[in-house]
Image (cartoon, rainbow, N blue to C red; front, side, top):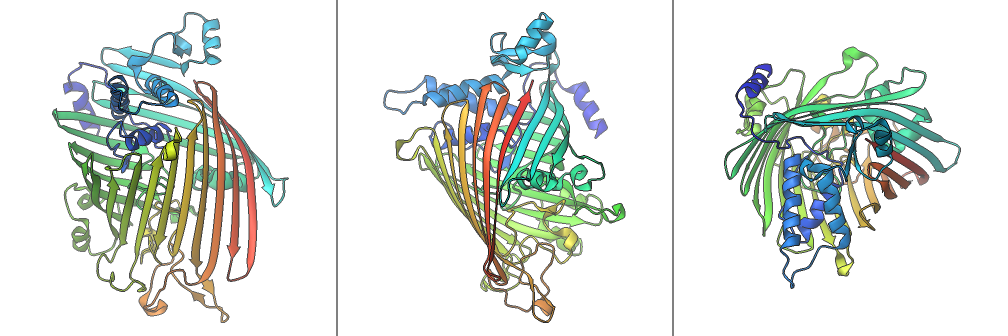
Length: 563
């Protein structure tokens, strides 16, 4: 890999200043682009494979701007909020749109007093930027402040999070994007309260390890990304590094890779050839945390996905995934163009193979529906028997509407997800589809289903209201009156055993638990890069088998600052 990078540095022509780094999956620009896609302003945004490059984001913003400029009198114009968001995202992502009036650089201002005043100005903030003949460089400092308080069943438990970090990103030699970020922080108060709201703490090593007197966490990511266009209609990119990814469609959580789990170390290749999209990657993650470090292990996730995209009709895709452990990276699964299932047979059938189909509509203005059908291991052998233990299938369907009933700047989403017993599990528990003990796909896990509703409304370019409700049903494993564990397929770490568990495994058998989760939050950005996030979470859990129930609710305030 070092030789590969050296070759890039020596032989790539130095011409322009493209922007090849990735924009994180969590950035709200993806919601904005999705809305513009449904409105018919731009075509599909390739949200089956996130994150997107800064260059790709800018190209979509340019399309939106061009649409706005060239509107006919009969066409629906962008709303005031949509125009304000376009301007905001242009300055945030496109260096060519920045100037002295809308951007401040702490270390590049004319005086120290000007640098200080820039921190509290309404300008896009950077700690340092540089643009040279061979590329560009940007540096941001990050600050996270959060207070969480339990509202029920009691109000005495709380948690406080304080974190600091930084990020460096840019592009060299027109083709090579880079990024590195790091953050460390302290957590005061109840660690259980902190992780109940900030679920990413559950797979953060420093937090889970908990050996310090005060709980702490650390986060880091970094990568190199190379992109080239050998012809006008083909773009090829290669990525190596650590980042959070999302694979597959879904308005709730993708069945394939949802971004729930830890960031993955990746070797990734993309080919974009007009209506054809192809992605292939091998990612590394870890098993559940264990105090005995000799019992910790690395596992690998290999994925090939092919998508056929007709901008005014539909996106239809097919893909497969392998989870394996107990050895280093397998060269067979690094092959971009190969059928993994047959490769797995050649490797003596040790791994956890899945197969999936994707569909998303593009032909209904302001409306979109999508679906995923997911088969874990035994692809077609048991599809005729929907109660068989070997029928490890799942599906998800969803509908999104933008500006329903003419309500501007409002997006509504609905999704239904169903996972049969034993989905994501494997005869070798180390090959379960998890990272750091967290399911990489839909977090409801096997033998469960969920209804999901979401409303997202931009009151302005500075104020966003988000409401969601999720209701799930799950059949859990249980211990019978004789003290024997009855495996109904509800635990991702407990695989199916035909001899011990029997042939018939009906959906939602076992100890029945229903869970409803309501969340509401308002994000306010009074000054650029100062974001207040005020939220409320209510979780109701009912164990129908034991006739018990519980309720937990939390309120929180986050303040994130970057400069």
